[in-house]
Amino acid sequence: MLERHSAGPELVSVYGRAALRDAIANRFAEATTFVEKGFALARELGVEDVTLLQARAAVSSYQGDASWLDDIQASIDLGLRLGLGRTTAVSINNLADGIGYFVGLREALTHWDEGIAFSYGRGLTGIEMWQRGERLRALYHLGDWAELLSEADEVLDWEQRHGGGQLEVIARIHLASVLVHHGAFDNAKANVDALVPKARESGDPQVLVPGLSTAALVAAALGDTQRALAFVRELLESRSPIWRDYCLVWPARIAIGSGEPELAEAFLEASTESSAAWNVCAHLTARAMLAEDAGQSDEAARLYRDAAERWDSYGSVVERGYALLGLGRCGEAKAQIEGQAIFAALGASPVVAKAA
Image (tube, rainbow, N blue to C red):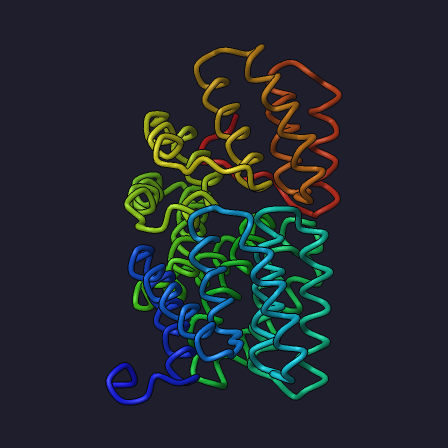
């Protein structure tokens, strides 16, 4: 309608929103077309639009292109200059999320904290709670589990009082991940049983893929191998490569531990080529587990050693612990002791489909 009757600033914004919709749905060609139309019209009209920058960033990020961080930072700068509170808060959250994938979790936590302070100071409670929910990912990997449990309970309570949507799924994913490591299997399963239907109903990869991965983890910990593998196979069919990559470690660990290494190999073959920090770490861990399963102890030890160092730099205490335990199984007693100490400090036990 706007194209026919009013090719003004409103149409620029609508192009951006349409591009965002298509990018989230992995329709990248369509999204790119809307982005190009939007920027062409913006130049013609001499206007600036934050949504267009966010959309172009989304198209790049979902295809594993780290250059999207420049666009999302530009959207923050523009939003601040134009006085756009909610839009700027969303961009700050997206920046933290991207840094948490491409760079590291310590840096991402800093940006989430800044974003939460920004939203809280402007009364943007819904955005603040979403930022707190996404921040749980950093708390999980950094091993700040006491804070995670407290924060997740608050986020979950708020979301349930306001309709119980995707934010509920995010909170339950991280609650279940910690609870299963603490041996609270019944509580972990209750969270999974609540999150899976909502994740499937949403169809949004950012909750569906991590949700199914967590469901596979809990099923494996409970000894329900067939259910765990069913979740893993469902994950392999995900239409969102970047989110499937973000959940690579647990599906691979479960498949190998359940005696189906070819399923883990299928995940690696379907993964994207990316230099993102998370992707590099996850690929090393998956390849190490496959080498160990194949009896290639020297190669597995080399990969586990590299993975442990990179997970440390990236900011995942949890995955560093798993890598050190793998290195220990390959004959390095010092690494085994260090890995056990990490889980002891978390008050946790490693969770695998079969005891190593």
